[in-house]
Length: 248
Ligand code: HEC
Ligand code: HEC
Image 1 (cartoon, protein in one colour):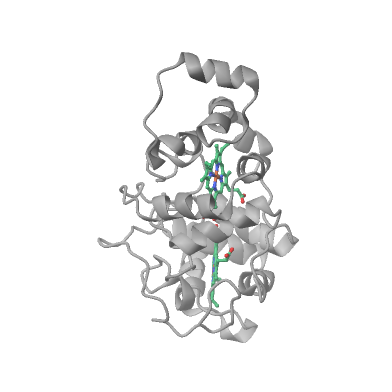
Image 2 (tube, rainbow, N blue to C red):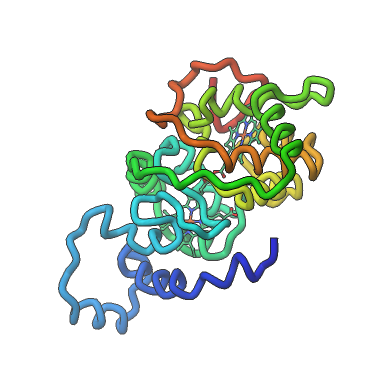
């Protein structure tokens, strides 16, 4: 994916970032305080506080049509919380996200995570496949059945039969763009994204080839979310690997 595609739409979000510093109660220089005093005080609700997030993640965390900005809505709260901590502590790297959460407390991150986990905006239209039909079929095969000959477990074994995730901390994989999915699997393979040890996704991603990644990302992005897109209950699926972020 070209960096132009990632960074071109950043101008509006960056302006939002400047506003967000004060909305989140972070940076407070004298100038910012004066500017704030001159403006009508916004109601102090979570919806108001997370306004700076919505430029990139959508008003209700539904995502935007930018290929790289993920949906947050409806993902389990502890998953979102773990990610906010990962950005704060450098286990995931994306400078605007790292910057935004640097000074936020665990308690505040947990409130933000809970807020987005409870949002239920509609899902985007599924993508039209841009790869061959055989690639899409291969992706479906890996997601639903894995590839035992290469020790690759079915993604659905942990991410849920309808791919809406599992409480408390496994995210849904529906409603994400294929470029975002590929980038995350790539980040695990490259060692720039980490989860709590044992990092099962690092083990799984490193068993996938480039072609596998393209295939699973393509198939996942063409799926329609189920009518009731809630994560599966905690412990409802027997996980094929141990994951530090999803205690069993
Ligand atoms: C400048 C755009 C931008 C802004 C503003 C922004 N984000 Fe993000 N966010 C991203 C991108 C891009 C990613 C994916 C980064 C990566 O590759 O890991 C991300 C990832 C995340 C994730 C992990 C999602 C997942 O499924 O793993 C969470 C949670 C999140 N952001 C929450 C927030 C919150 C809360 C705010 C406001 C305080 C915010 N973001 C503001 C662009 C942004
Ligand atoms: C053993 C359980 C397990 C299996 C099997 C599994 N995953 Fe995961 N997956 C997880 C956990 C746990 C996380 C959350 C990791 C974290 O906290 O960052 C995750 C996160 C992800 C994410 C990040 C989503 C986001 O919003 O950023 C992607 C993408 C992903 N998995 C894809 C896959 C694919 C593709 C497969 C199949 C090839 C797969 N997973 C199989 C447990 C699993």
